[in-house]
Amino acid sequence: MKNVTLIGASGFVGTAVLNELMARGHRVTAVVRNPLKVAVQNPSLTVVKADVADTPALVAACKGNDAVISAYNPGWTNPDIYDETLRNYPLILEAVRQSGVKRLLCVGGAGSLFCAPGLRVVDSGVIPDAIMGGVKSLGEFYLNTLMNEKELDWVFFSPAGTLEPGKRTGKFRLGKDDLIVDKDGNSHISVEDYAVAMVDELETPKHHQERFTIGY
Image 1: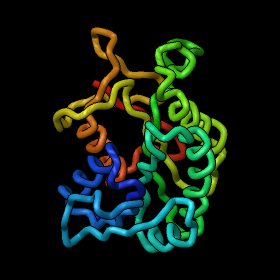
Image 2 (image 1 turned 90 degrees about the vertical axis):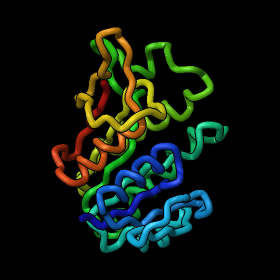
Image 3 (image 1 turned 180 degrees about the vertical axis):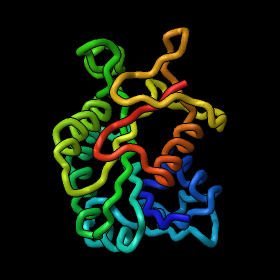
Image 4 (image 1 turned 90 degrees about the horizontal axis):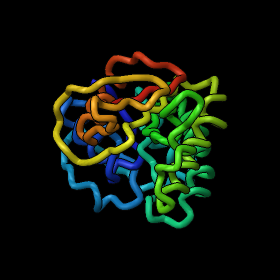
């Protein structure tokens, strides 16, 4: 059993990760902006209302735990998603550092993966304008900030090109910096299987200060 702080536990990915953590018997401190959005009730779950920009509150929520999983996302419909991602993710890093927790697992994006030699997904022309701000900012955070982080034992876990509700199969492939595609050229993963792989990495760390990815 691990003691874990899960930031953004009420979001799309955060909810799936929370469910997986609970199913495997971990003890979780869920950090959310609106506790009413956390539907799970479990003796091993503590829900904390806090904003990621409130560093003292975030430090307190992380302190003493084995790891922090960040599923933070300002919201895909948030018009300020680009700026808020680049402003708040470094604050999450700082809070984790101050808390003394050494292991940080970040829910990443697929935009910074390579889909061809030298070509990242974000530059391939396939990303809709409606979500480009979120895709671009998360990629910039990974490339410009997280890759320079030497103190924390971090991972940036990029999903496949399409991350959607589905089934928990436990059958998938993992990679590093290249988009994983199936025999038909599609890159996809269910959020349930993404959560399986995230909690696998929590329980048995295989990646350190690097990115990895998933796909069918």
